[in-house]
Image (tube, rainbow over all chains, first blue to last red; front, side, top):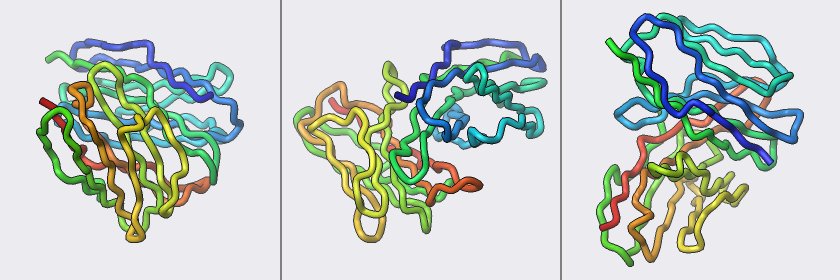
Length: 116
Length: 115
């Protein structure tokens, strides 16, 4: 069965520090998709990234970077030089398969506080 | 703006009542997902429809039901409401999955308060 674990429930860092949010997943499939979503205080869910299981290349987008490691079933998210606007709840999520049961299962989220 | 529209944004109702939440997916998206976000349970997957048919079911209560109509909009019906049903209900939509494309886009959510 699919499962996503975000062990860090809450993290506080001072602005400009780097912070890494951990995500560990479980799946029985060889083809799956991993996601990160951001939920700012306003409540909407904002898509950040989608990664296919067959693409282990790490990705960088501005201050955001993602480290996908199949060997440890992890998909960690790093924010470099954090800013107060990064304060939000961040969700890691997983979807299995193609053309069948492709529901997206979320971790419980990590609440990130960036202190000025 | 994700392109997914949920109505209403806020809903306050009494225990025992029935409500309907509506979701209009992004243009062209065939899949619709419903999620419940409560303080203690996180984002719980409820149900998914694909082109009018139920595709996957999560921990959806028997008091809850959903459907997707021919125009692809979806409705989530919640009945015999209890205080514990108070939550933020999200709808998401996605296009046909393929190896190089798509992700689920979420609406702004409907905040349901049962009093």
